Length: 415
Image (tube, rainbow, N blue to C red; front, side, top):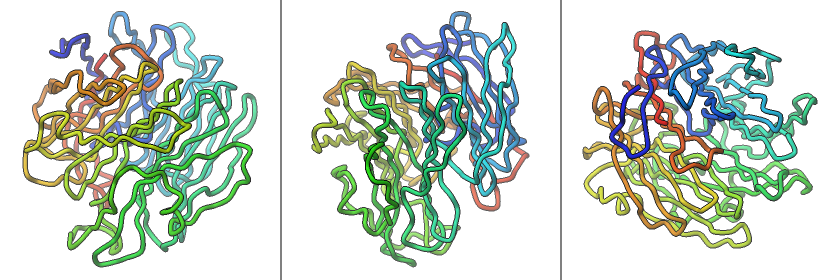
């Protein structure tokens, strides 16, 4: 345990054997709390997902439990707690089946109550509504890639609702996604994601989207080419990729829009961070009520007084019922435009009031300076200081380096 320099926060080393993307990705909720216990999930350098249970009073680890073997560094786990206090975990498959498990604490042991394989899927995002029903969003790799939904009633089986979004373009779509719910209408879901329109060598158009999915509405699959008129406006122009040349599929780069986790509080306020990775910038989009379509968009560089820095694509957001927002963003004090990990990155905590006015901003202390990224922030605990989990260590890159066991990174908890 160490002091962090941030008011109200202490720091605990969760693991020293994390993979290069130990706390990826944004859509995975990695922190849930039950009383004085905080459950954290992370991915080790053998691509085994763990749940680590922390005593929040003593800031000490009670137990660490390996829960699922993944294929590579994309196989992070998402956690959720149900209305009965059980911990639900879904581990991403990345071109293989996802794994679902249920856990309970018995004294100082974490006991598995159920384990099963689900459908093929990547980037799982899961929430539990007030009626105890679990909702899942995930990416499916097919000829035309899709975002699919699934659900599970208490004591019931998982049920696939099928594709809610299908790419109009054959082949790769990044399709990271984030799912949230309307607190006053447990069956109504909000799905945030980013996608690109047709185009190959250059001038591909990238757009962020937010869809409201009502439980009793007729269920349809939307093609990405039809989304422009249906998507919620974030006050963001189309992103023109231009002439960037990078390793990867011929029709894709990561110079695009990437969203943080989507957050909705009990008043109906909605907030999300939208990254423009082609320019190394980001904005916070705020909608004060689900009864209005009007959004406020604020430039995070200006709010943090960091005009000469670059904002990386890695961020996490906590929205309290008061409207106060705590945002953890990745900062690069360099002109280099980042894609994912950057060896010169730091994490900054920015606190805004309900209208988006800055309250404070401060850099997080790093054991090894300038290699902190992939933050995950506690979403359900509405205290002044939500817990933050992050990876400290280099990114080996994707594609050919998704399976690489030569690096071990640290996983840190701020609490």
